[in-house]
Amino acid sequence: MSIPLQKHFDVIVIGAGPSGMMAAITCAESGSSVLLLEKKDRPGKKLLLTGHGRCNMTNLRIPGNFLESYHENARFLTSSFHAFPPEEVRELFQSLGVPSHEEDDGRIFPDSQQAATVCDALERALSDAGVKVLYSSAVSNVAKTGNDPEKKENFLVKTENDAYTSRAVILCTGGKSFPHTGSEGDGYHLAAENGHTVTALAPALAPILLSSFSDTSMDRREDCGAEFTLAGITLPDVGASLWIDGKKGRSARGDLLFTHQGVSGPAAMQLSRELPAVAGKYPEGKVRFVIDMLPDLREEEVEERLLSAMTENPNRHMKRLLCETFHLQEKAAILALSGETMDLSANEVRKEVRKTIVRNLKASAFDVEKCTPIDIAYVTRGGVNIKEISPKTMGSKIVEGLFFAGEVMDIDGISGGYNLQHAWASGRAAGKAASEYAQN
Ligand SMILES: Cc1cc2nc3c(=O)[nH]c(=O)nc-3n(C[C@H](O)[C@H](O)[C@H](O)COP(=O)(O)OP(=O)(O)OC[C@H]3O[C@@H](n4cnc5c(N)ncnc54)[C@H](O)[C@@H]3O)c2cc1C
Image (cartoon, rainbow, N blue to C red):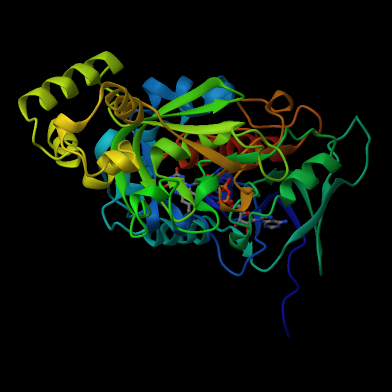
């Protein structure tokens, strides 16, 4: 005879991503009975993809730089990050059998170099803490069972085939990107049905699609010859900026990777959240992606160096001269040369052409084709309005007993472990507060 499943819990956590698993573990360790409902057939599908499968778990620079790293809503994180800083995240994972190490720019990775180790450790911790986990259980509805202000009403949480009640609910359904991992934006509807507003959703940390890359893999410099494609080359440590309607917008610095559709890598990804959210293609020239291949030199300095290199080496082929003078890869040098200059030597280059080369080195401009689809963004910008959430407890200011954690909220960070740090810290804060609420 099968034992009927318990239907009432102190806390129900919706979504077994990093924030939901952290919330459920914290809640259960604080003494609450916890049900974790996950839509997919296993936990942490997106977590397994993080850091190219290596999981950049957090970042040690965060206490010092979080105000600029989480954009306009960074202040919301002060309390939760103070309560669960990156060092403590590392210690917790160490205690769960996941030692980690620091790589460049403060980024923390598990020593195993595998995201699966992080996910497995969380699964073990869920089981050790006594959390009841149900997979293939997509939540379709969350509502209070009554509205008597004098008593703490229970929540009724419905899945396709079942219904459960609880004192508190933590919504950890993630964003809307990489939908095959389960993050399809369900949490926005569940929050809205409970009176919350959801700010505009947009891609963040996404590749940028360039017009001339959309139909073929050739870049715009067709005059460089049919063999030439930028796809696959990486320009290390460049400056990049977005120009919208002729005005310079945000800039970023870092490595840039050309793909068959446009640009990726940190310098492009950081800027993607600034793309105007317009349906369809942008009109020609409206949004431009501008690359500064020599961000440490002013335009005049580039011109000076180029002129003196050309004077000293009058017979040197321009492509070679650019590579040697500015330590550029050959394809980057080609990008700075227009068709007719490609085969010239230095003494054949006129002043206007030299100026064009300098401009190309400092500001090679490409038309952006359209806003990147949110599906292929690493992170979703926008979400449940943080003005309606307490930053200390992650509790709803609208519905008592409802809590949030992770990307479902209107928070996004730069790349480098910043988004997982938010998932851990908000999961921990929500787990503690929901457990306390449910037991009092
Ligand atoms: C390719 C890629 C690489 C990344 N690399 C990094 C990195 O190295 N470092 C970093 O800091 N960040 C990284 N990120 C971002 C990071 O993965 C996310 O910010 C993080 O996973 C968010 O955690 P979350 O728990 O809020 O949501 P998610 O991880 O999206 O988890 C949400 C969970 O809720 C479940 N769910 C959704 N709706 C329902 C429902 N109705 N009922 C039940 N369950 C539901 C989903 O199935 C899912 O399991 C990366 C993202 C991507 C896509």
